[in-house]
Image (cartoon, rainbow, N blue to C red; front, top):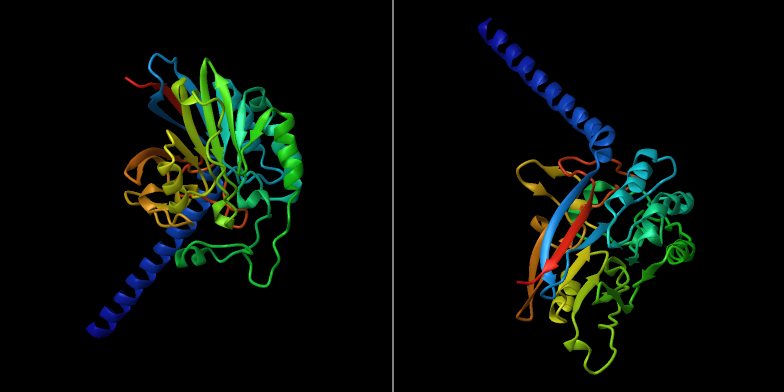
Length: 316
């Protein structure tokens, strides 16, 4: 009799534990889908990379907006970012998740296009999201097409880039360009998305033979922070590298962090400002956790969506 009661008690305990685990999992998914993915944050960083005596310069770094029609909380928040009044907006790609999102995106970013900006594309500026088994990300960096036997839907990338260009933002897709701000020459070098193996290096802008003696700062812009790209730009003397793509892991373990980065970047570098060493040189790299999510996995956990405000200050 006692054995029967003990076995029954054990089964009841196991059932209760299983039920609790399921309820906890359902609650976590609901929290990530209903609360955290729309709990937008602004991360602030300071970095002393400007020439001595330069005034502070504010960069607003946007990445991985992944806009779909009807995301009104996200579009309102994007419009409100204009109150920061940045000196420069840098957009590191993956703006879209749906073919009909271009017009809503340009409207949402309209107030920010009152400020100077530069941009590069990500894979989701070329192709709409397709369903992918989320566990596939643990097997290594994914490549398009994302769905088995399913062709990716091409987006109107030209219309998106034309909209940015009409707003005054500079396209850095495999291009380099100098832009002067406050008496300092900002040299930009950007690449197309390394996640699609489209990066082609344009070097740094070249002007007069004495240009390196003038006050300047070198900023590299890329969507996916693959190590080969970080190595290249660090070796080329970048003062700052800006990237996105990782979503900060999107679903993280509290106290541990990201489980995946969707590229070959170590998980502890999935978001934040860190130094990268290559070829005997060092460059600071800011990886944004991004603003949106995959359309087929619309939740975040322990990884709030973010825009990043970098205040660049003078070297001592």
